[in-house]
Image 1: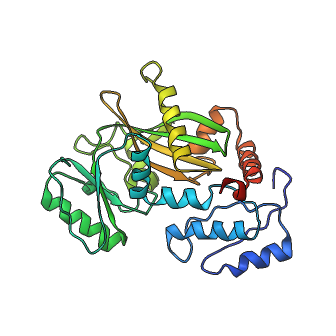
Image 2 (image 1 turned 180 degrees about the vertical axis):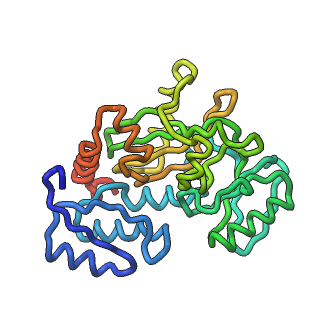
Length: 300
């Protein structure tokens, strides 16, 4: 509204007909997509975007194919493997299966949901050091999170994020880092649910994020170039954040890609965009512009 646009908020829970009704009644130029799930299922958001495309309705954010590839962390890694993009060694344990760790997949390991986002189900207990703990944590993800489990090698090091805006031509934002150096000595530096979402926990342990400093010469450019490779390999569009780890030897590992990340004014993406000269309203306008330029039929 500050940009002079007419805005009609629309809640979409489990009924697509509200979208068609709003389009017929309001005739918008574009849909600003902030959807994170449909009918309670995170991976269903891609189908809502497909529906928008079938209605020839422009939208902000990522296309459905990119959402599908990035929402499934195992599928993401398979695509990255084809493109020779580095990632931690891993295995998948689908629901209903037990963990059978190959010998070459060495401890420590971290256990995550294959499809859920926002660090759902991730805690210090997610890092395991033996097969018994591995089995326990896989069972936890299956039963408590309700998804398959991704088991990957834990990379000790710095947690780095790179925001990207664009379709064909990409704007790469500064390398951002999650600062967790004041956590208790016995705590691993990982983005748990509490690290990401508990303001009280963040304040207690000085958890913050900022532009990454003290990187080796040329490393920031290397990180940004790698992020662009991931974005293009997964066919992403609109905007996304690429998450990485850099170990003590400077080796980079791609953890995951997050299309349509949080863009609230005090979140990492908006903060890093501000460093490149976008104030918050300018960032929102750029996301609208990128959405209006996207041509689904040509991309297919």
